[in-house]
Image 1: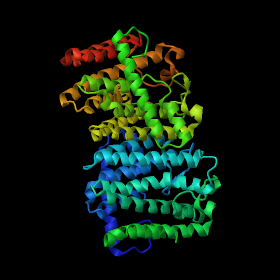
Image 2: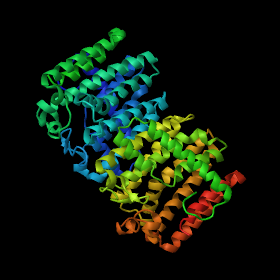
Image 3: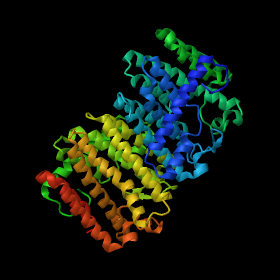
Image 4: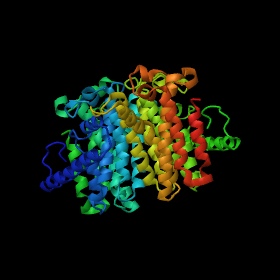
Length: 297
Length: 297
């Protein structure tokens, strides 16, 4: 998936390149046709088109195909998911929140273009996301609802992570779980669901990719926590070691490094079990889970 | 419309009270059923339920009825419009933007609950707005599209107003017009259109209330500029005289006080002409335009 060069299957590589190219073109097109002031459009371009793994829109396209549909039908939904992700990065990086100055190996948006523009460009990305979702050829109303629910959850996750607001009686393990499910899990889950919803898959298929998305979303965040703990900033492309310094709950800080590695393997295995009913059709999902887990190896 | 006690018609008073009550109840319900962290919900309540004229959702309900539909069918759309409005106030008030400390006679959200919470609560309001619009019983996809287009325009307007980004050759008059059409006009126009769209009105009716919304939206902002120039903070319920101090373009600063008053009367007159095809059914729209213009008298 282009996340890390860990020898994916050759067919995967070509397919991946195709998926990425269609996503990039669609994002580019969405920004170009938007009615933004020129300086705002430049800020949105900086935040949205400046690289990134495109994990979430890839999940949307792959889940559409795994559900028996065509990826063309969910390009608007996939772009919408990536825009929500880009919005969240821009706002989370702000001085009042995580105060990060490095993102994807470049200055964060507020460092590059100022705080006012970063706030407004984040807002614009969120608005453009819903414009894009509403433009979907099938089930636009349901896609918007899925995206909005996930966005609200993500914001709740960021509030809990940054400002607290837990029940006093809640254990660190339960708090960590609540942050991860909301902050990262909800949008990854939605990315998968929207792929199935956007091609009018049966409810049983939507449920299946939804459960797979839950496993992979949680695994992705556990891997991220591990990277933050063990890798250099140069390798990760962003500031690392900050979570622990900021006193944030992370998998390694709550459960220890060894349990964190075991949890990743457990989630990969669980994601395999979940998609067993799909048989051979689930191969792309299995490969994605493996590649995501491999980021830490 | 409860904006200023200028002896509206007695029937208007009862109708207005009914409209306001149904909007307040619907907003309250939307916040209560949302899945926000408790501290985030409190922040959203503070920003959304702390008073406000409810002009935009009232326009949505009235335009639904004027279009021959039932207000019940557009309550989700009306709430969505008000949430987008509340989002924009919270973010525009932030220190990096307008840096306002007073809103509706109370401390602004970032003064009351901190900047991080204000950024995230604004984000949550925007997300909840699209959840609400997507929940509409009719044409949810089109309502979301209308709302998203207006939101994007509003953000462009705020960028132009706060950070510039005009064409170098653009005259002050043209810049002012561009700011107003985007920053205030677009959402008021959408509020009206969404009332008609949400009751499946014919396109000709949607166009008619849309044009009326253009007149009233522009008039509303010109009135606001005049209030900022001529009234006390106590009367306005928010900081005044700031626009000119910040070097922002306003109607009085570009055109002078007398021309500003004439423009308001011209827009009221134009709004009357626009809805003439509706005959007696347009009475509520005429009353609203009169009450809005009366804020400065």
